[in-house]
Image 1 (cartoon, rainbow, N blue to C red):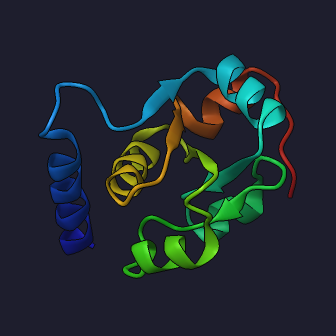
Image 2 (image 1 turned 90 degrees about the vertical axis):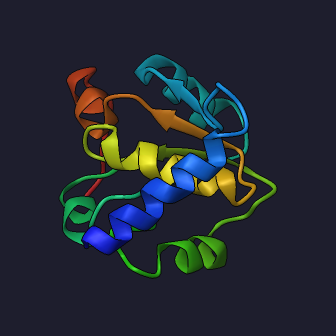
Length: 127
């Protein structure tokens, strides 16, 4: 687990060292909701399967960032030509995943505060 985090953190450094900006966008709940309803976007839940089963954003694709095969799974499940709307529980893991995905060429938007912020704003989840 520590090895995976170190690799992902290293990828963040590579993805963001070329500029002072992040390689993905962070947005609040309102902007995230607008994004997923306005354009052809892939909603990506990067939590564990158990967390996903407990409740997720409708039409979200599960790509567990803690899985050692995260990068491979992402490439096999996601379309690089579509925007990704990424979230996790609180925003920490999705920030790591967003940086890693952006470094691989995906166009990524991250939900600040994760699904906790989504639920706090009384947005729907499915089980």
